[in-house]
Every structure is written in structure tokens, then in C-alpha cells.
Length: 113
Image (cartoon, rainbow, N blue to C red):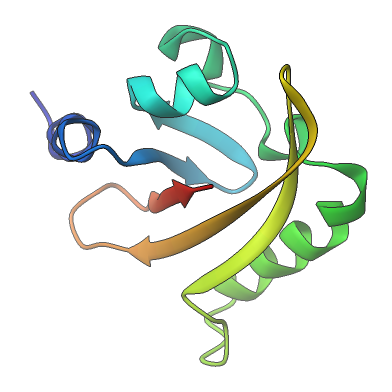
């Protein structure tokens, strides 16, 4: 089992919804994240982050991801954005974004309501 899968499982066991992304695409999620959006883990893989983002937060997330990619040192680790879930068309989630070594250029996001 690779590092990303082990980390997602550990976070799931701790009650934390989490995902790995690269660019705008979701690479892997844990079960809690998938449940939050009423999808399966497999359905989430390959999805665009923007496909679950509320229209109000689209530019904010695009800007954040672009600034992370370009190495902007002023990018915050924590921020809030609105997303769309089947049970809530405008849920505000707190995101903690961590760039980790040895995860194949993926970025880890821990998601909290």
C-alpha cells in the first residue's frame, strides 16, 4: 500500500475527511470525504475540485491552487470555501492544505465542517 492510501486511511480512522489532489483534479479521497459528498471513493477519483465547489468559491479555489503551484510563500495553510453537497447546496468547509514529501507531487487537504 502506498503512502497516500495509508495516510488517507489513518485520517479516516481519526475521523478526518481528506483528499489528495494535483492541479485541479482529485487523485484519491478517504471514505469520510466520499460520504460527505454522497459518492463512492472511486467516483471521487479523477473529479475536478471545481465540480463540487460552490460558484461563489470557484475563483478563490482557482487562485489558491495557482498560488500553491507557483510557490507563493504567502499562501495560507488554512482557508474556508463553500462547496455543494447533495444535502447542502452551500456548505462552508474549512480546508487545511499540506504539501508533503514523497507523495508524487500531490497535495493533502484535510476537510472539516
